[in-house]
Image (tube, rainbow, N blue to C red; front, side):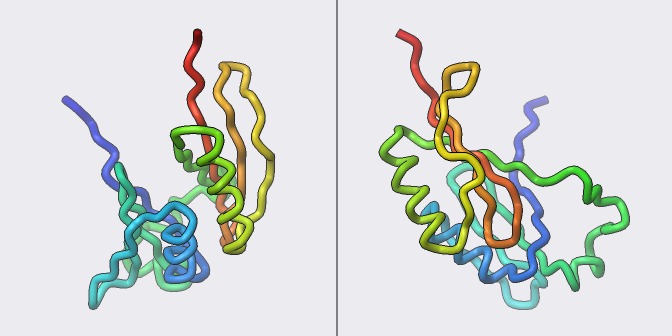
Length: 130
């Protein structure tokens, strides 16, 4: 079996605003479907499905969501300059930096931010060992 992550579901106070944020920061494709209670953002390897927190219970089993386990999504970037460019966009479009870029114990450069809805994200640049 080859299990493949195809999408992530995220609850947002403002799904359209959140989708616009992700589109502006990462250049991902914003998609809407008439008649759907959600907004889709297509990245290069996964689609993020954004539901309104107030209406998501019509479809999703919200009673089983664990509010003590925050979402942590990770986005890998090609290089430090790209990371710096993304950080400027994050700040410009309402995100908040939690931890500026630093070298992790395993040698990658990582940084953390919160999107406008407070979800935690990691930016990462893999460093090649010489």
